[in-house]
Length: 277
Length: 305
Image 1: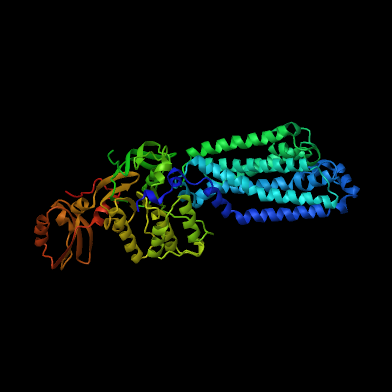
Image 2: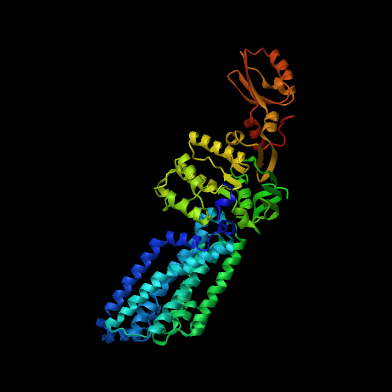
């Protein structure tokens, strides 16, 4: 048998479109599912206890008495309305923060982390281009956030049985923009990781940027000097306003998509220039 | 179309900021040969290899592998290359089998017959996660991953580290078969023994620069031999200073070991005057030559001819 007959053309042209993504998803499977299940349980709890808090006016007084303090936790406006309850407990804080943590973790690990561990070299030594590697890893990032997003979304939908009847369209828009937000920060971690060649630095820088963006978004409504900065915060684009009550503006979603595309281009460019070990 | 060289580098240079990688490396590896790439740790062996695979971008100079530019045409080149990294790292939670299956699929291998033969031949442990395997057992998986698709060029960075002697022999046999099949092996090592048994030609790299490239036989011919004299009394090694090509290795307990190259007669004449009681001479030893190139005073040490 000659060398040629051992290969299908795919082997000569390049690594299959999904092999690298599949491998990364397999390696992250446990973490991905843990986050998804954890957040789903949390969401179920938030949804299930809503009827007990629905008539609790003291909660709303708390927000009114110290709005800045509450804003730090992502709580603005009424806590007891269905929209306010979901914003304050899930969409303004917990869900985007978890999405961003998962995404930064993967973004920093998928190139810089694997390169530091030495496991990237055998993969990069396969017939695969750098661009293909980045695209597959971005694909794995996008897919990886899905279980968390979909499970949380489904659990919120169950709120219909707990007097949490909110607009399905706005719910989809809010979940979708949080998903995009996660992808954006994951790509930021990927770019920083490739550029600096360090997983630790990638996590540090992206987390710092994410924390700043979160605080800007949270305090924009209560601290006047922070307010103008809200337009540079991707958190604000995604969930800064009242996502479940007012929905997310199409322009905000477009901005999140634009940011992700920009970072993806940066990732491809940086990756092409990178030395892998 | 004439066959291009398997690897061809000219004035290949890679620096990392102010840190040296390799400088002005010239290499020609012919198709079908086993080429040994020797050098102490940190000399630039892995750097050269990563440049060959397109993992590093050269700072200056040129390199082609199987006639292709590793950066511009890396996909087509890497389809025909098998790589065993120096510090092989596998995915800790995956088993050997999962590794083989993933890499076979990624390389779109149609037949796994040869791969499975290799698994049997090297008694590869397939069912435990690699984090539970010894270094040698992980290395065996790496060997199968490098060879399983019958690549035209094998790039092996310190391949036998961690292998027991029996498997080292089996591995040497595999390299000979590969070369007999017309395929090329590029073998890096810091151990001469590993290389001199199977390589046709070697290059020695030191502090990022190639210091010599030659056939193993030619090197052996120019390599210094070792001779040991036993005296009844303490003898001043300075007595040999007038003889060309002689260097003192050690002088303890009335035993004097000398490395020498060239004809032996002048050396024997001087030695005879000192009335040795015994003499042993060893065949030409590449080790000695190798050390000569490794030593810091490589350029001033008298070697060969």
